[in-house]
Length: 561
Image 1 (cartoon, rainbow, N blue to C red):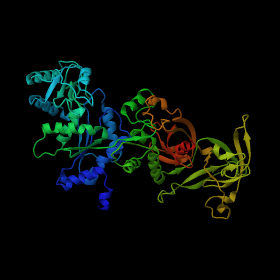
Image 2: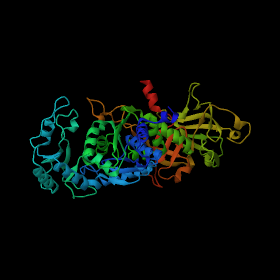
Image 3: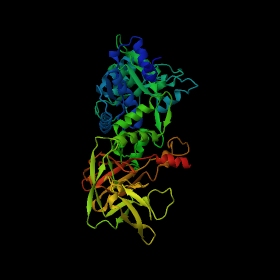
Image 4: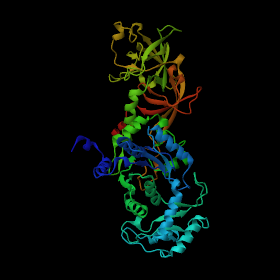
């Protein structure tokens, strides 16, 4: 076996096998078929990258088709969001299509099935239909309406379309096999009545086709060659093929359905129904809340399309469902942002530091690298003065030898600046340090080239000049759920595992270069993590979101347990 063959995933092997058996490469066509009943989430990224990736690999067109057959749950807002997300991820679709494009053709084909005695109108209640379907070990029983005449079925179905009945009064079912071992083949429903306005067809229709009837026929109409879906549709494949058998014409491409594993993710939920609950109950601020696993939420949080695509490609395509640790996603964004994010200084939990031997009123501008990982990133100047902010955790009055930050009598280097020595500190009535008094070595300036500037000290601290500091609202986001599998507990609701500390808003003090930062600009706050400018930001009130820390702090928490 060649190295190229070994590197193919099992989906690509299926395509290669078809090509080797004579399928024409120029007839390859793929599709990504989301239902517009919510925003796309990280789980969809695998399907997007699979289908559009195949399009790129084989130079084949990929359709973006909206499975819009349920007007009770679908909205134009979701259509727009899906298009925005797919484009943002860097993919271009060949045709923008909708299942609703085919409503008339699907109806005409349903009429054909009735005329051939392969479909009938059932007037049972949904409860009765469910009961007479049987169980996985017991065959179903025929509906009392299964042998209606073709004429009666045609008349009833046309009256259903004309709006003469209420929802639930009738359904159209395919007449297949009530004794089939596959319960999906036991006379599945093809059409139901829904008196709801559709986001595209408004009230033109009051009967809507079911997913199974729509999906394969849409693939066929678009001449999609390979229809890839997740494992829960494996049992649907037999029905997919049966429906195709009813409409297939000579010399037409017959779509092939194959299944791959759904990716579940730790510490989150990806069910659209549950994500909608989070939105409607106000647990999050919306579908694009940075705590949501939606693509728009990840984008707002500061994730890049490159990181998401790389993550999807890294976890690959599998044949069995499994749980992917969300820390792998966080690793992907860290790895990308380390290469591209400008370094800046910000203090999020400040304590005042005064350099007592630095001249009052003096200030200077120190040269700082924008990104040591990028030779072309250049440098910037950062203001330095007598009074600075450093992080509270970077100072202790007394500390052991393993504490390499600032302590009384100890020395550290200020990033891009001077070596300082802590001489004393001031505390409030509670014993909290409110000010640190230091001295500095004027000859130790970074990059000055003299002997003192080359002197080594073990600690280097970031800082911000108080006089020049820009204040900003910093939204410190953490995982939305405390449990690894919040929606897989029989005795508890997923809402029981909401992390009460998933969002903390604090005031940060930033170097002045950030004053003109634009929405979605991403930075590394040195020694803290990666942050980006939120859409709520204004010139008067900067807002930053924490994208991810520099290290996986959750791994440390889990190790302790």
